Image (cartoon, rainbow, N blue to C red; front, side, top):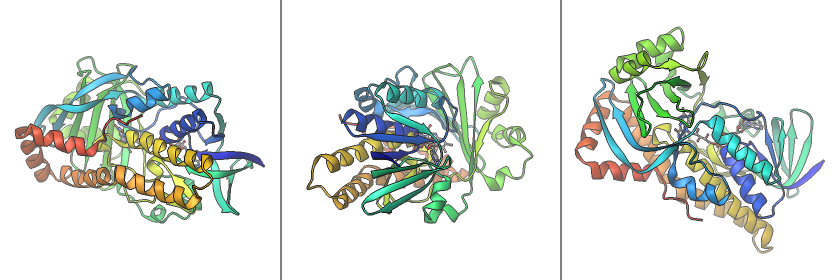
Amino acid sequence: MHERDVIIVGGGLAGLTAALDLTQKGIGVLVIEKTPFPRHKVCGEYVSREVIPYLKQLGVDIETGVAIDHLLLSTQKGNSFSFQLPLGGVGISRYALDDLLYQRCLQEGVTICFDTVTDILYEKDRFEVSTLNGDTYSSSIALAAYGKRSNLDKSLKRPFFNQKSPWLAVKAHYKHADFPVNQVALHNFEGGYCGLSKTETAAVNMCYLASYRNFSKYRNIDDFNQNVLGRNPLLNKFLTEAEPLWKSPLSIAQVSFVKKEAVSGHILFCGDTAGLIHPLCGNGMAIAIHSAKIASEAIVQFFKSTSYSRKSLEQDYQKHWKQEFGQRMRLGRTLQHVLLRDNLSRHLITGLSRFPSVTRKVIQKTHGKPISV
Ligand SMILES: Cc1cc2nc3c(=O)[nH]c(=O)nc-3n(C[C@H](O)[C@H](O)[C@H](O)COP(=O)(O)OP(=O)(O)OC[C@H]3O[C@@H](n4cnc5c(N)ncnc54)[C@H](O)[C@@H]3O)c2cc1C
């Protein structure tokens, strides 16, 4: 049995960020991640700038990506308007971003083991974490950062696992010479929406969320792109002009936005394991990174102060999580509801184009302030 202060299950954005933060504060960490780096991942690849100060403090510079300061919104019929983003973001592929964090973890001496966690048990004030390769690890704290959906949700009997989600997501990189470097576009189509933005390689990332109901009427992704996305004239123009850089797109199923708990069975849940904000907000990665900071602060206090109990740690983490992200999650749900209804989204987009100060406020409410360090 291998012993550690903290076991982090999942080395994505939340897991690797927490690993860096805790290691820099002298806590013994083990990360267990199932997939080697670097690897592509279904994601819009637009990171809100709010995370930059915190990542810099951890020694991670993401400004190698492209600076994005404009959002273009379009309706299903291609009526569009563009405006300046209050804070803006960075376009960087998950291939590069996750690897950047991974390399930084290696520099800091974080132990990362590549294996799939199959169960997390809590007994006598300790966690026992088992893996597919047959290893068992023990720790005082278990931080679950394994993303929006995993085999572990089933083992841990998380209630949402058995609820079917109506969403799937598709992503691919394209070459397109004229796509504006500083722009993220959000185009509506029937039953979904599609984000386009450049990454550090100059490739344009196309990532969309679509309902199964619509998708299942078509034979494959190309067919769907042509017949559904292509009905939005702006997406049609992009798909006609752009050259796919991959043999085939990546896709994921069962993308769920249901409410989850930030603490359950004494396990702290971090990033998407605690809740996924609707991707149209472009804030999921920032929330994952920020929640890692909140978790790390509470964990450090747990190890450094004898009067800070497990109960206080769990209560504080839960409270802080809700305070910081609860409102963003709710607004994301409302916006997604409006954007997916063509009539409502037309009114919304026309309204926003007339009142730039309201647009600014709505965007600010889906994002956080630059994380203070
Ligand atoms: C379609 C779509 C578009 C999006 N676009 C954007 C965007 O443009 N901007 C934005 O900010 N956010 C976006 N998001 C959200 C963003 O991708 C997530 O919020 C972010 O990846 C969450 O990070 P995480 O660390 O919680 O999870 P992840 O990054 O998913 O990391 C989880 C890790 O856990 C590992 N893992 C899983 N199970 C196990 C196991 N049993 N054992 C060991 N390891 C395991 C996985 O391999 C993975 O590396 C989008 C999401 C979707 C679905």
